[in-house]
Length: 438
Image 1 (spheres, rainbow, N blue to C red):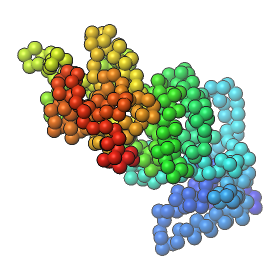
Image 2: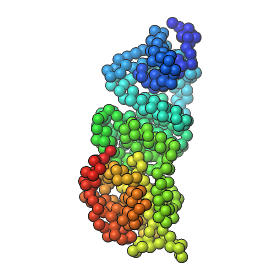
Image 3: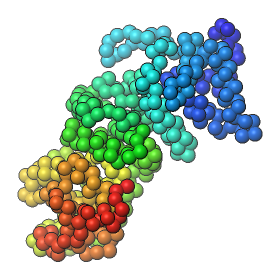
């Protein structure tokens, strides 16, 4: 059947189906159904409608179905790509400004083909996007998606996919738990080079990498390996404009929801407790010049009423910087490890060092942080302390704050200089009480 005849038979949904298969390169029946039929009238039997349409496409020779082991996938034929070109008005040629070359404005069918060994990876990557689209029906956020094949926004790095929102570019790295530590190291060295490029310096929005740990029954083991590789190759480059979250698909989708709808919710809870305790609170970003450009969420201090200066107790000025660890952002880990650099700058300007306190939601989150720090060899750092929201609210301040040593001892303090420690518990005892990490 000729292209013109087929075009006459296609409705708006048909065109949308073909375009989604072009954009995502291959889709399973369930994924096509989720994208285009799931909201349909159940009395019209949408599963049957979907099956009928796909069979029609195959009979028109615009779509082919291939059995790739675990999945049956649908991909466009040459005629299918030509239909997409016509309906989407894809140009025959475009000018690549960055590379100063003229190239084709579309991909041919053979260029969209996925090698059999990469099909599982592509299907899982596409599923993350489909799950995000489903979540976004509630959120109503504007976004664009770029598969690695279509990525033109960045020249020096090619993540597996990009979900681009007005304020954040989410780099998707789909991990099937098959890459070795050596391969992971190479991946993150490429990111280190990207962050050092002129392209990165002139980026127009924040970048958050979502490292999606799939295809494993023991995700924490895989997360640990990925975290180790990041700490060995990229930790010094992570900041408030480039952060990383390593987790499972389900958890990362919820992290995206929080980052896009209520990014400051937990920070506000910390501020509320600090102000309840009588601290004067300032946005940490205002003090960046004092901290060698490191960005901490909160700067809090107690003020002497008569002088208006920072209060001194037991010989120490009562001023602190605070961050949370909600959803396990890598930037917090980086600041813990490199706090000494921030304190060197602070001491040069003000003649003193400052204490850094990580405020956790609860002891479970504390255990997660301790585990992540053990992986990257970040326990026992000087001037790094911890607390939980309930302790910060209910206990005397010096007792609410505790230190975690490199040997696993958890200690709080009997004085406000934070020099006299007393043993509370150990990491092993805490793990036993809480039943291990998440």
